[in-house]
Image (cartoon, rainbow, N blue to C red):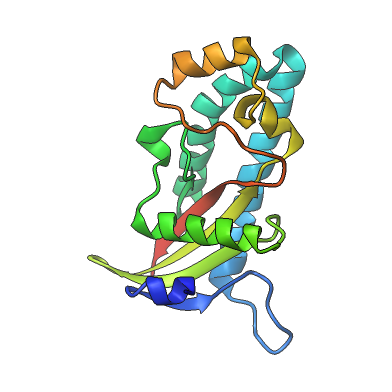
Length: 190
């Protein structure tokens, strides 16, 4: 069953960020992609610096402290609600998916299982909320080689202990290279 059929409250306006030549680019999609690029670039740079300075255990602090701060800064500057989510969360307080996000993440996993490349995978829709129409956009986060140190199946005892100390409800482990690790999730009222 297609995601569109399962999301009865949503009117799908785009199934992927790959647009055909006949379709004009959606300005909301383009803006969301730009925000995600800034988020990903900033976070990745800080994670790489932390790993270089002190290994994967340093990266855990960056994810805990800096990722939410980056999302908050981008939200305030852009007018969008910006975050990350996953079916297997590490930070349950900030990253647990709502019902719509969960449906999209399940669809992303199904698309990956069917052979689709995770890197460009995205979904956008206009949904009705209590406050009116909202534009929602999600972009899959592929599991890269560097992610496996903290999110893979073979985590060192030192890293596991650091994760357990900071995130006692962590379920964000056991990923393999190329899996859908989670997604950037953005929304704004229309």
